Image (cartoon, rainbow, N blue to C red):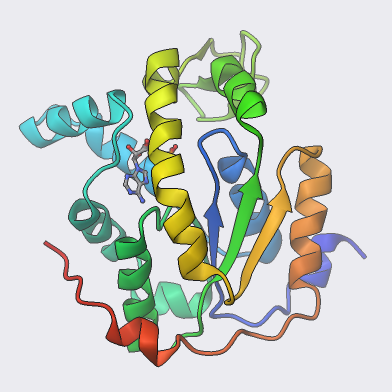
Amino acid sequence: MSSSDRHTDRPRGRVILFLGAPGSGKGTQSSRLSSTLGFPCLSTGEMLRSEARRNTPAGFRLRRLLNCGALVSDAMVCSVVRTTLTRDTLHAGIVLDGFPRTVQQAAWLDSLLADFGLPVPTVLHLCVSRTELLRRLTARRYCAVCGATYNGGLRCVNDGSALIERDDDAENVVLRRLAEFDRMSAPMIDYYSGRDYHQIDGEKHPDAIANNLLEIFEAKPLPRQVPDAAVLSTSYTIG
Ligand code: AMP
């Protein structure tokens, strides 16, 4: 039986989050897990990059922000995410890549899940050393046609297009993005620790990591509902 067969009768309504520094493999592992579990995957980085490509004043402002490696405001990210996280999409199950990134976003998500009667999210934290992150990010290239990501190389194996560097993978921008992650990660880990939170060695081969992630979901009951305290502490509203 293949791993995807084993997961087709998985209970719905599970919200899965990936935490991890830029270059930790969130994009790769979230899309693998999403196809194995049959849940859609939402990448806030992808959504914001597509907004930033618009030739509008808002698109231009967003482009400048992404290109310098700063985080987008909680209000803007939550409002972009809210358009996708409807009661139906959440009840069907979803994998989130790159959201939440701040405690305010995490509390906002808890409040949304509680409103819809959904359990706490399952949090998968990919841990990778700084040296390895820098090595990966400076080698990272992507295909502008199909979006596939590569660790070096010149041409996309899917469509033969030239591979290019993401604007925010330039070395000075990478350092800022890593610093942003360091600033936010400890409070995020504190927020989720003691809940359905799992640290995963993100330096293994991608196939081994994908297997470790699936082991977490094997015969795992749905976690309990969002605790009242987390909901009550939420005073955040979308701007
Ligand atoms: P990523 O593709 O996840 O590395 O995200 C690329 C960029 O998008 C980040 O460096 C941030 O500028 C922005 N971004 C993505 N997700 C978020 C988020 N949840 N909160 C704030 N900014 C975000």
